[in-house]
Image (cartoon, rainbow, N blue to C red; front, side, top):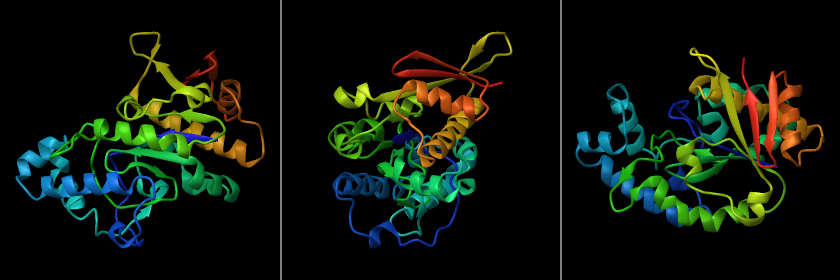
Length: 258
């Protein structure tokens, strides 16, 4: 099983791991990552206002984000599942997983990234802020740059087993499953009560539920239970106390929050 997640703008600071410049290049993504890092350095080394606009930074985040991006190659790292700090990762609560589930998370969770393309749960990551829609010099939109790279790379990372796709739209656009991978991919849509009545996608509960579902899937798989289909994904949500899960198609599960 592989679980595909979006990153988060929020990151836990610091890190005692070796800087990415001190480690061997990724065997599949190293060349592309070097291109993006070079472009990021050119961007943040130029006009501050242009860099903030290109990175889609809100005013309150500009100073910290540009400082982090300028040091992305040389700053200390943390494993991806310890670095990302947004709502999805609050729902996952990776630090609270038991030993078997935590071990599985490190190798089974793949986080998509505007800077790195995709990183495994245990891969060292510096603090940075480069969304998929960032526009980098010589590269253009980061997510668009990564599409052909990931079209070639992802089949090698998803060689077998169920794929559970929990990415947000910007990161889903970076790579679309095709062929055999598409046939064994289950997408999840989260619906919540709307103030006006009915149900729809609401950002916070959707993100938190995706993190919570990730934890439920990891615990289930770590116990040796079957995870082969959309029905198994729905069962993991229900077993974790989720209120409703509907298998709409073989490749789509709808889960509800309260």
